[in-house]
Image (cartoon, rainbow, N blue to C red; front, side, top):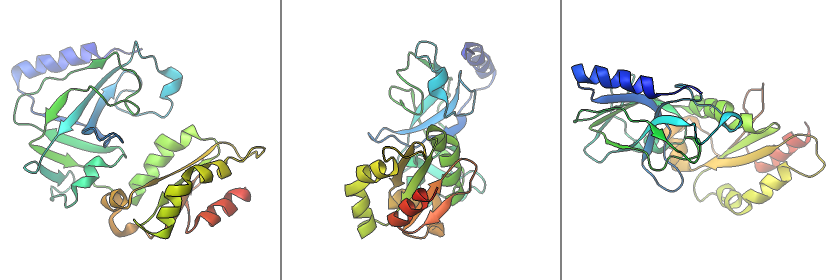
Length: 246
């Protein structure tokens, strides 16, 4: 497996001549346990690219990753990379869809590589070095950002397909989804069916608005399958009808 150590020495040598006060990588959002946002730079599995096939190649004893937890507060300037316009909804930083991000710090920075990880960076973001951001520049996102993330990072784990529910808070659809999520999952994977392995999940309304603004019509259920465009329907019944007809 590729080692990151020479890469770190190179950066450290450069830093001796010129202080480095910024890092660029991919923002992975936050985990469900409320950890700070995570900035992924590279690892020795796939370089600067994230991969959905990490399980096949993953070895915890060999895995090395350059990634950081990014701390910020109300004084941190948060702008879009492309335009430098102020980000109105900072929740976008927490969205679990990879997006390019640059972090600028007050103090000089020296790259650090994390080793002896329990799992791949998409599964384990604990115990990473912490950097404090003076300014954050984040890639602009939209509905296509969600589609790309599902197709590239989620769908490869399911040979049947994946369903993403985007629902308004406190709507009857959202309440039904919260109560019957596991039932919906079981119905998509009925024993004896030959349609492969499926999964269903959802984003909160707040997170969806932060990523896609007013692009999303509620309720929306997007059905993803390998080699097909995302298919939108407006009810869970339509999801099951679509899958039953495959």
